Amino acid sequence: MILGIDPGRSKIGWAFTDKSGHLLCSGIWMSKIFAFAGLISEKQWSHLQGSLLEGSMGKVYDRDLSCIVIGRGTSSNCLLDLLDPETVSSVQFVDESFTTLEARSLYWEIHEPGPLRRIFPFLCQFVPRDIDDLAALAIILRYLKQR
Image 1 (tube, rainbow, N blue to C red):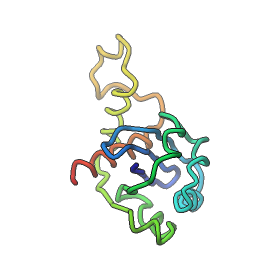
Image 2 (image 1 turned 135 degrees about the horizontal axis):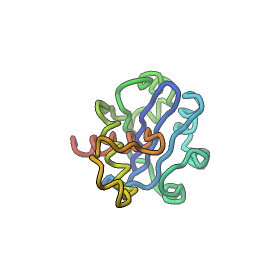
Image 3 (image 1 turned 120 degrees about the horizontal axis):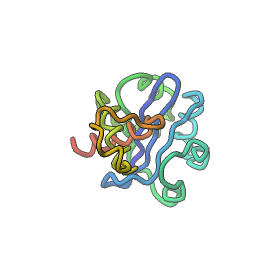
Image 4 (image 1 turned 180 degrees about the vertical axis):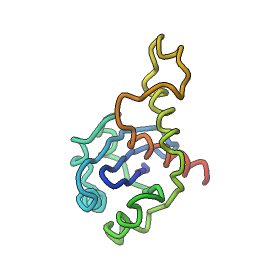
């Protein structure tokens, strides 16, 4: 299992995938970065349940975490400093440029637009929620493509 993280100033997008990049679950952590780092270091996935937006947390409990992929951008160094040194050995960094655009596309792949939405050009369509979690998924997919 791979954990992707899109760290920001006020919220953190996270996503779990299998080794091929298939989304298991994702969400947006709205609390402090040090609390998030503690959960990741201690692998307390159940505490992420309250921030879940896609998928099911039940899909991650019985899997081993093989890698953490973090977008190199806002707050990435701060998050790295807060992670347990044992956890840091499995961390990879990926450029997160344009992952928000990729996340928008991923949103519409997961949530097929209705007939009226199909008429409007893709770039004119607004996503009805924050998509930081899908940016984390885009970071994982980018990492898998580079490998």
